[in-house]
Image (cartoon, rainbow, N blue to C red):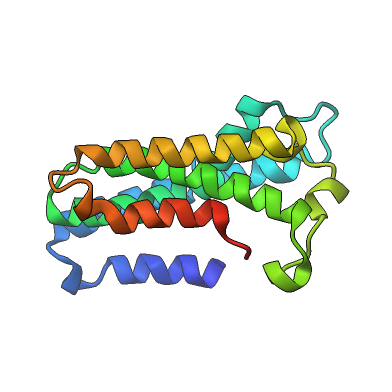
Length: 182
């Protein structure tokens, strides 16, 4: 992971991406996504929560996941708009819903999946005593929340000039994240 993160910085400095100002803008956005207020902060909160006296509540879990998983998805979703000189705000909102839906689905798979289907060890969140969307909401409410996040992500795409056809791939991605088995 550290090597890939460093490689991402190297890729973002490539002249083929665009002029210096564009590369700097992308580097700043990526640094924010992976740094002390993004992925690193979220991961630190996740680790700290394993030994905390009080379990995290739902707003804290959402904040943690929006930083940890969501920040990376948000960068990926908005980088193209930044490169095209377009407003990244709608895609940023899309990514917030997508990121939370992805994480809720991940929490559900940790309980309902198998190592064979998911490709990773399951049951680790409960074993670590982590507060997750599933532990806080229960299975049915967690699934409903994931669907609500997908609905939120898709609704943002309606502002796209060619919606709904132009954004169909993004809609399909949002739906995929809550129906995936891996």
